[in-house]
Length: 329
Image 1: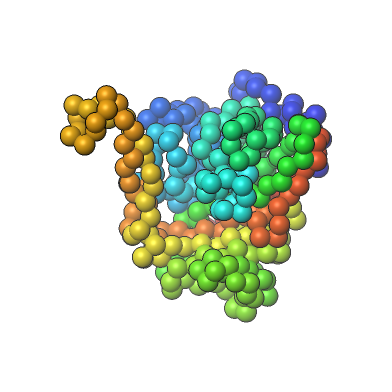
Image 2 (image 1 turned 135 degrees about the vertical axis):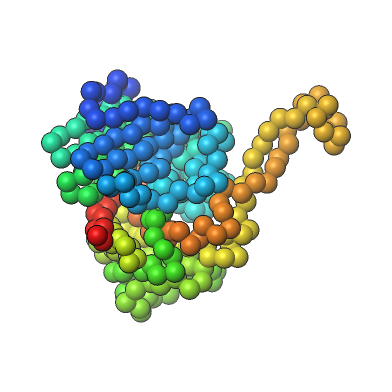
């Protein structure tokens, strides 16, 4: 486990090195592309959000065609970072907390003969929020073309004088055909069924298959879980600190109902219903296509139903997910 001093050093702003990376932007949102051999990874600074992982031109992560690229909300798809809570398992009103909705800092990019790593930091305080504690977050993303791996380490440090607790997840959307996809390795694991009032159940099947909506929070998962379809198999390795795994696919009805709030300002002259000079207008829009449930399943490595992590002042926690892709020829 890293020390607080090491976490603070990593979180300090520093210019990226001359490793294999490029910078770009979409609708004003900055991103960095890192590469290693035949592999490339795109990470947005908004949320430190991995939005693409390609090997040999094959995309391995799902991103919604309707994802909102304006900084008002988290991107739909890829690998959102959930902190200080997964789902509603925490103090925040916002689903999955706030880290995925904030701008992170690119600390540096380094490379070896077989890997490239980008490091991001978030050092912020929301004093009026439900989580008013100082914190240091670092997100280290490493890609290896030679090994066909994508590794992500999340580090949480408490630099304050008061302990705090959190839940977390790396909300990974795997680009697979949901109609033939399976999740393996969870037989015998306990889970909370979010479609049945979070009743605790035991998975007795060899594999999780998808013939309807699935939303389960597994506890005490093995160190390797698989997600597969006929074209690719993902081995998902995690450290023991990421003790849980969430399996999700919204299926037909939920996908059709998924909407997000989007706030804009509209002057009085632009709409009859606006009675003041400038008044917020809340619109409901979709950031997920009605048929996109077919194109992914989620396995989210995290610390959720097993209970929160509590960090005393000066303590540091870290969790790592390493995904290996076995691509059919």
